Image (cartoon, rainbow, N blue to C red):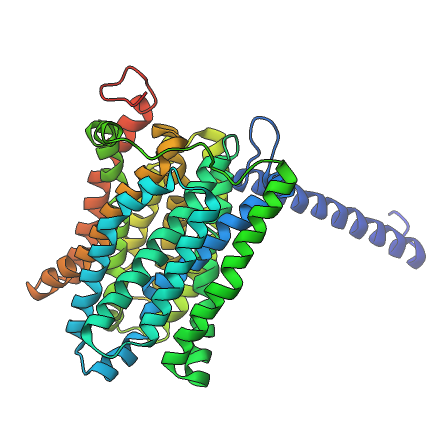
Length: 456
């Protein structure tokens, strides 16, 4: 029988084994994260990643993200914080408020094609000043609401300059200033969405409690005029100093009537609308009736609000990841991803446990995040950067119509007695039927110059 180890030698051998095991474990863990990071944020063919892009073009990224963040002042989640005060001040029912909001949204959406066409030719400095000037005026009108007409005007201006113009300025510049790293640039810019969703509700609530809702709007207007507009101007000045160029996109021009007709006659334009339309349509309907869904499932009142935190975090992460993949493998190959993930999330809402609500919000964040990073890049790849303002204006108008009609459609289904699970599975099937066939066609033929109706 072998002699037993001496205590000292046994301890030394055990320590060596622990050290070896720890080293191997750390190497394994490090290798895992290295591979996971490469999968989530792949470098492009030239070996460039997000860090290199931020180092080289941080001024342009900051400019685009600033405008996307500022769009929060016209987004539904922000305006909903003030709707109870407007309703109380004017003695309006929830139905009347919803009707005014829907009509104002449709009116703002109708102007997006014209504003997008103007953005294709306007210098960035002028576009920024007009946008922030209009947003400041919208905030002051919102603070002065005293009758139904002023409320309608405030909602229209906030939706047009906030949700509409701010988003278009940020994303059109990201699409036009970046060619090689367009997907990553757009992905970084759209992080302004979850940043606003995470910060502004708390800030607005504190302002309302401290100043009252009218002065809260005055404070928001002051931020737009005295902080955001000067910051945008300073970034453009810095860009000119760094790159030695005038404020881009100089030399652009508005699309002619013939070019406008060329776009609307192109089969790829309508195919993209079929792909992109279902996500905002179904998403708006689900979010609008989130309370009804939670009540039907018997969930705690805190489930849905905390779920939006999960949504914002996941959306931000996957917005960045999707842009890197769009640069790596091509945006058209990823078109079906947002709809597929969102459809899977709808399936989770058919289950009773509140855990599946958080799974839904995570998948919703993945779907919307991937959509933000992929769709603008796909539009630009198909139609070119010179017409991206017109394209985003046209597609944005369709998106606005979808979000305005969605609550009505879901409400009619509820009033007609359609079961909740039927609505959810029907929505998932609708998204799959719309997205998958068109995604396949666009991936195979979208970039072919000899495709019927292809833009030159």
